[in-house]
Image (cartoon, rainbow, N blue to C red; front, side, top):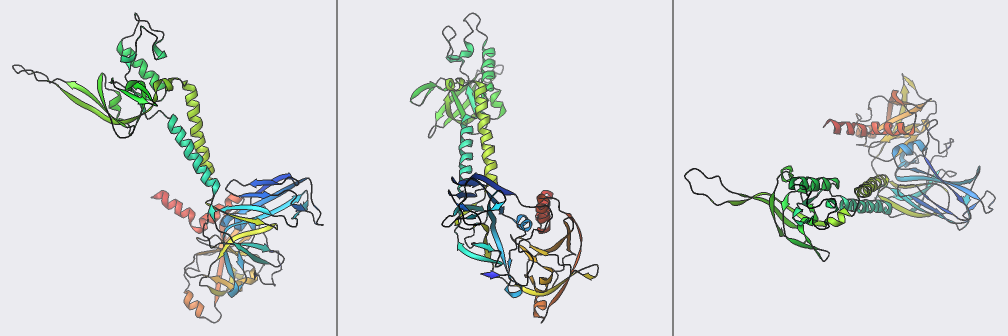
Length: 496
């Protein structure tokens, strides 16, 4: 167990920003039935039936409200006012959080507690999968973080499910997407004296049968209506699909690679096919070219010239495609595409791992790791406009690349901690959430070895007004990103 100095008299948890707080997730349910709160990023809390008691220890009935606040990043940790530094001076250690959360329950205005033998099954998500992180509970009375257990991280099942749903929807959309498909010229299989196989021609009789070019245009228009393309290639061969035999022109074919536009513009081409491994077929569009005879020269025999070669596989019989009205096909396809986007959005907010633990007390918990690292302690004096700052306001240190906020009361700056090689941003707040920051970057220019060698090392840190005025939780995130270099990194990427 690690404690803060007993000299500290201020409330342990003190939010720094006026009127700004983290999002609170709530679930109201019948105490006799229990309930489950799902946050949406992989975190779930399952409350058993008859779990709560009042201040007198009596079982609670009726509706209760479970409140859950989750702190995943530096901004939310700062907003919470929950300190992550333990002890002071040489005894101070900084906890680096994987995820911190505050759990409470109430009935009306009365705060509740878990009854004896009752526990809440928690599955807490985070993006930090290092197994070195341990679970602590904040004891505000003792002003300490109490170690509970080391909880092994597991893959977030909600993220896995969202990714699987996305893959399934994508596969289904791919199956319905005929934009990669072609249909070949099937005029030779239409007999207008009988009931045509393609209902497009039902209204034609032998006497008013359109010319061939008109028929091709009608076929192409129909195929385009389904999102596929028409290729004017003749082929009289047959294949089997699902145990049934079909002429190649009466099948919808999926291209392995897109065809150049020229292949859709050639007319009256012959087409040969060759089956490859599996259900892949090699097609060649070709024309028989007879060389032009020169005067006084004998005729030369012609030869077949391959115009385009491509590989495709049978997708379905055309009859199956035509059995689906275009509107229904489009709606189904659009629905699947929307499902893909929905699952992408769900996956985007899911965290990578979860840690599961049974909570038998409400309160503030933290999955943290305490790093053993080199530190230098100095007596830091904050000044502004040449005068020492002694108004009792808290100071905050944010370290680049670490999920932690170090809070110093004004008197504890005489045991200020420096880390060699660690970039640090020190600031304090004034009325109206205005931020005063250290002037320049005095820490980075220090000779820390020389400073550490001094008997009583001292450091003067000059503060100045910044341009930051925080009005919302979003402003806190922007502020953190800028002072830790994330905003600059994004700008640099854009400039490249």
